Length: 185
Image (cartoon, rainbow, N blue to C red; front, side):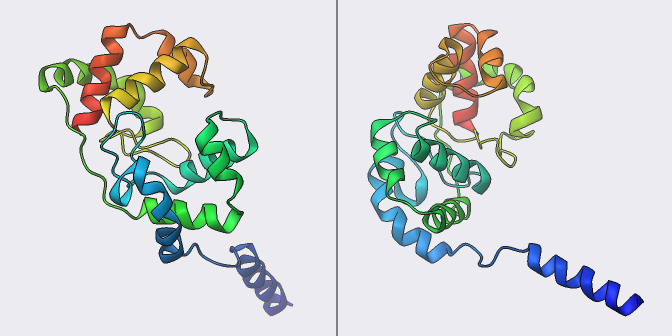
């Protein structure tokens, strides 16, 4: 009887595993269409678009699905995500998560001011802004992109649970300093 119970436990563990692992190479192929906005290997050089390199796979999956379902609004991303199936999304997320992120740089004096503001972000985004699970990597993002996102959270035009409340407590100067700090990482 013990062998049977042990066998059942072992088999149930294997059944709980995903049927296939994400294919990074397939994600790399799919990502060719993303390079124009998100940069080579997902390192954006344009403040209008986020860097995806080193981003949390769970976060990327959730965001692409939110664009696909219309929960997150962006005409370009919505149209692109609409053409992706779950396997494509998993593969893209795995590819970008495996890429080495780069620092976007930023005004060093402003970054020093922003470092003090970052403490309130650590709980979700990690002590080095590396991201955690469904919470995005902020380290190395283009400062202009961070500024826009924080202002959108503050204005309520982007929804994101606690982010609206967190952003509501930031002045425009705080936002610029925090963005400079995150970009410098």
